[in-house]
Length: 388
Picture 1: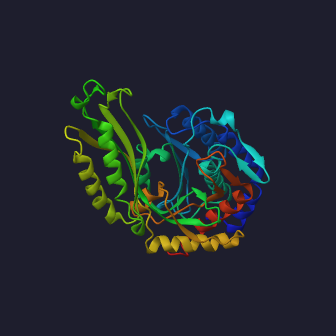
Picture 2 (picture 1 turned 90 degrees about the horizontal axis):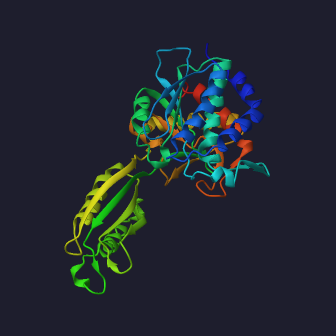
Picture 3 (picture 1 turned 30 degrees about the vertical axis):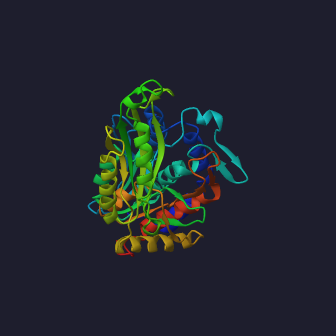
């Protein structure tokens, strides 16, 4: 049986207090991307909530990072392509951050590490799944995918996400809604890299000319890499972390820099990477040698005609929930790039509204928890009318 939209909306309208309680539980758990036990503990809380609401949950073990959880709510027509709700459980914060600033509520806003990015989105997805479990299914099966390594490029989660997306008729990624209330209809792609340079150590006073400075080589490469930035085309390169050297009185035998590339058009990725690889291969300081390693990568989220219809369906559902979002382009990357790249119509930033992510002032507007859940549920029920 397909759910009655009014029943779904009414059920969610009564869940504000329960949503805040679940959000408090998972915000007050350290779950940085490299803290697998913490990420898995957040998953255990979500799994218990889902199973208590009659939803089957499958654990997909991951070796280094948080396990993936896959929740399934059957649909009225089981053979239809699945509708996917996506979210990640990891945050950017180190262990101990929860003790320093636990979940708090001030002036209607919730605060705490990862409260908006994206633990509130996880809560929303759980309650949308529960709403359909209690009120009747969607037209097709609903899958909730909860991953554990998005903040570092989803090195283990990406294959799981792409496999699920290839079987999906639509994807709703519950990254935080923009501070404007808008959703995200496009994102940049990103490549995260490390270049390591080797030189030769020598005493910087007694045998200076015998040394080969890896730090000098890195400095020259940084200038050349930054010069590849083309703001008009949305291409930026940033060497955000550098390290190297042995001691202040030694010519540096090694150095490394971590590089962030962002781009808009998929066609620009290979061209810029080719120029970057040439910079790394060229030795400005004779005798140095450099290597380039890709540590993580996000695909851009591009909007095709089907994704445009999905956005229109979401807008119509949001109007019924009391707000009218626009679509924004975001320079940040997300797992929605993988789902869009796999061919699934995708909309991102449908989670509750927040801001100042990744910093100590991160906040979430608690009054958006229920309306954003209602809008997501309404858009799911509107897929057929949208031709999806």
